Length: 568
Image (cartoon, one colour):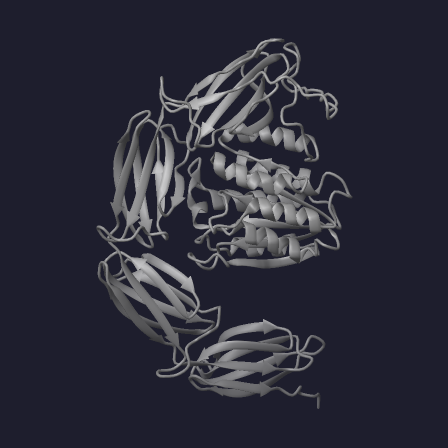
């Protein structure tokens, strides 16, 4: 089992399955934003996350009600793209995985809106409820996660949020941490594989609860696997002496950073002097009280990190300086030279020592380890790659221009008729020619795409209806095409039926009709190309079937009610 996979198992287990009374109802919130395509160990995070979810669901006790909310899976530019895919129910694991496997990972990160919706779907004001939220970024829609945490805690009957974070920087970690901690939950950070594994051990060992800012490490002779004891919280008038006052600089001899937000992960040193149990994570500005003992402290800012051992003795004060050997890179993606910064752009940086690239959106300000930075900027289906050299302590500002045009697709049932408003309308854009390479996809009647200049095929599909048109995209210009499906809708009602199957009216040389699909139950609604059809309704308790014919006209709705065929 991969480290990341086990992390989600750990959080779901510790947050919702540690005991039969840990939570009555749970919703897992799954990040389906575009950044989930970035990789860990050569595999997309979204693939690992779905595997993790599958494993986590296996650990839940019988009788637990579980549901699924996802965000960022339908619209690449929407902050409202949050959906309850599976309502909380007993035995919903298969439905949850089926929904998760169908997700498109393409949008923003409306994390706060997703957490709120999950809480509301759990009826959190009246019932005990737990949300387990898996994300690889903080909210990208300007919402206040801390304020939501306080609100859910105040209004909830017994609400808890547990959050798994994928390589978040200090500011992102601060945002999601307060959402969890305000509700009595915890944030499980995963800055790298080793830190994630240590977090996993702690999460599996206990039910997440509000913990002291820093717990005392074990004595030097205590094995690394032992869990240190926690001393009672001091009374209000007892203030532990502050003896740990760290600071962070980008380069040797540089000024301590005061306007940024480094984080400090504090580990108890094991018997070999390496990292043992992780006992806390703190954010700038931090002044702490550490008990005597041996520690390893990891300071992180952005994508840069450094670790140092720390030996604490009674009565002494420590002011270590952590040198990140890093610089600041500002990337401003634009569609044209001198144009506006594109907020729809993704900025992927493969930096020195990276286990996987980091992904940002819009204007990106990043702290990165010094060295050559490989930057890939995407706007829609267009991308540009550049190499930027960054020295320790240096700030480099870079405009990256991605030549791109804008294509809008409008779809209609018939020419000069009603625009298709069905959410199931799928639009796929392919590069012209025989390669069949996909250049973009989307849903709904007003789909738009940012694409490199060139020729394309646009295919619109809704149920059984499909149409294709050609389009040409030019750099920095808007283009618009219309797709006409020449189709209508067919509504079928067949009381007492268990199955409905639709056939084309024409027969082949062997006298057989082509099946166009089936539905289970006594009703069906689908979109079909204009033409004639035969409908068959089947009944479980008899081999007899009822048949009817229907004619579908473009831009119209056809309704038929079938009568059950009686014996005799």
